[in-house]
Amino acid sequence: MRLFGSSGIRGVIGEGFTIELAESIGEAVGGMHGRIVLGRDTRTSGPMVSQALVCGAAAAGAEVHDAGMVSTPTLARAASKFGCGIMVTASHNPAQYNGVKLWNPDGSAFDTRQMEAVEERIDSPLPAKGWQDVGRSFAMEGAERDHIDAILDCVDPSEASVAVDCGCGATFRISPLTLRELGCSVLSLNAQPDGFFPARTPEPTEEALTDLRAAVLQRKADVGIAHDGDGDRMVAIDDRGRFVSGDRLIALFASAMNARGVVAPMDASMVLDDMVGRVERCKVGDVYVAEALKRTGLDFGGEPSGTYIFPKQTYCPDGVLAGAMLASMAAEQKLSERLDALPSFPSARGSRPFRAELRDDLLRRLEAEMSGLDCDRLLTLDGFRAEFPDGWLLVRLSGTEPKVRTTAEARDEGELRRLSAMVDEIVGRCLA
Image 1 (spheres, rainbow, N blue to C red):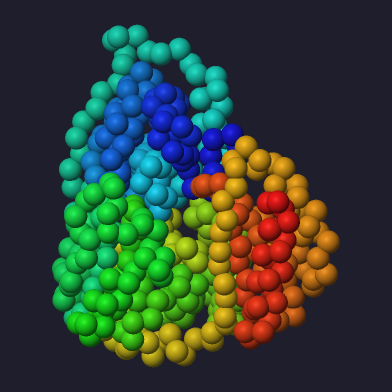
Image 2 (cartoon, helix red, strand yellow):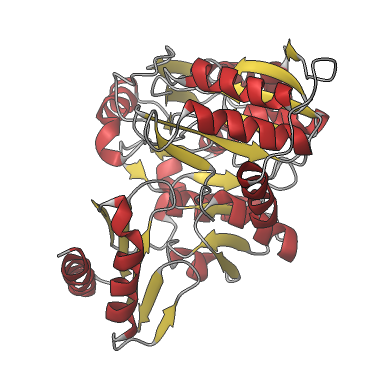
């Protein structure tokens, strides 16, 4: 597709993502769905993009209900009362980015067919409505309260001590409030909305969470929780101050739920294969996790980036729900003990930028390099995953920004060093 990546449409404001594009998206979606709910995260460009979307949707005759500044899972749940939802966000991307993600009434992101239909409408717009048929916009209240109540209905109360780092993003209010109403003792960090993200990057990487780690250790908290810019992601710090990757949280949730199997993308750890048994692999992106959950009927799915989908609740990845569930689990047993019971494999992740206009050429180079590897199996569902007797490596182009993402995992440090060196050499040659 020309506009959509693995997680909606995104770009740098004024360059890859313009006001004209936002208006065209609004007009395309408004022509397909008569009633729309709209939300945005804390980015400085959010109000501007939202207004452009409303203008486009109104030109197509649609009715837009603006939920204001909310998290993505809040907006996706609110879509159940409308034809669709539009979230203005660039999720974990840096502050200069923004974009949109589109949601169905069941909480799932627009699938491939729906995204293609939107692109077709953008490329071939219908005539605008006359003055008597233009759409209207309204303020919507209560979406956040509905989201909190839904979580409280499905998560056991918890008296855990929790430190939560909202990263100045859209969970600034809902995540601390949900945890407090669950019964937790809560310390909030970076819980002021600020689209410049002054405290840390919108992506909650291990390196970005030094303040959260210090807070957990100083307060002797049971768990530390961190969100990305729009709240669809959640990663954690355990009671010993250790960063908990999304891979291990997927395994932890699946084990606690006694899941029959999990859906996970190509970059997910082999700890899932050892712990869960049935792992349905899919392309990277929560839309593809949701598609596979619907197809297989499995009861849980997630991504190493920190997104988790509980389909009995919603098909939207819900970092607020995941954080509440983790707090509930931490009250029953030390999180460190639960994690130490899981198998552990050394891994390495990395990324390198490339010039966006060279994407097709880079993809051809990677295909030539990876197809020549002497490996047990090469999977090409999304990028190139080469599997070896004691580990695997993955090279793929990001669907949200011009970066080559790499992952390597092995059963021992020696094999990890070998695979990491191999993938670094491959990417280096392709970028040269």
